[in-house]
Image 1: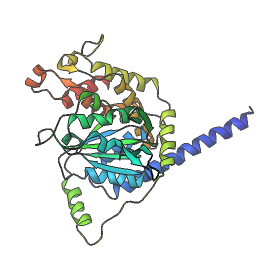
Image 2: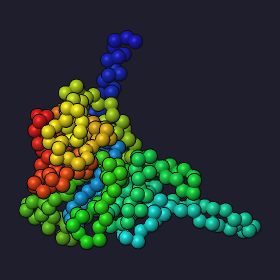
Image 3: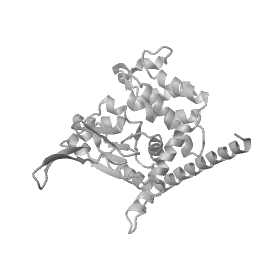
Image 4: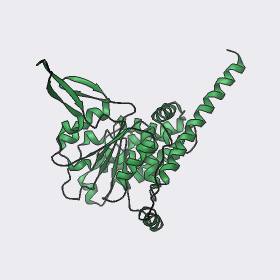
Length: 334
């Protein structure tokens, strides 16, 4: 192939990447017009979706978790649906079910009625208020992107993301999520209280005669193009080594592991390494860069790892926390 042709192809790829990055930044700005004082939460939610994964948002009621998911669906141009999880919710309420119908001629047949899981963005609101049986109904959908009803496979739309909100376990009427389901979430996003200035803005923006509305900044096709670009971004050897060193040091009993691993009852598996590798690329794209750095690894270590780890009883008795242990593991990286 002639050199000038190669150069023109490279220029086209660069322009396509820049266009995709502009779409992503526009989406971030559009969300920021509606969600105040939660910049880190917005960034991590966008990183999760750009990585093609699912997120668990944890926080007390009233911190705009549900509004954030609503806004993401609108801004990203996705078909979004919401399920309010309650103790009496059944798996069929999420996945759908078959009903027996009789035609005018008397012929009977089953017809599948799809549930709300057949959406591009599913908001599982207060997921830990449902029983473990219902929580587990999402496992196959989140991992395999299809569900099986009465022996028949039903593919989910593309893209497909679950953004689940969860109340702290100390609250009444909550059930802890099983470890297998927690591992399906690419990231756990902690939603904290806004600072004083952000809360002041919330007061004026949401209690007046007019409320700011979000607008669409991307389409589903734009989002899938961005997700493909994330997977094509190059990662240097230093980034790969940082991911491996960090995740492996969080596993007890691994050769060459960290001394801190003695405080860990069980640690993250290879899925955590995959999630971190995708997330650092997505963070770079969100910042307008086309290659991740070790700083991206350190910034995303806690939300990627903390729901995939548990401390030993002795470590908890000595006052250790998951956030503290992860911070010490990060300090060993750089």
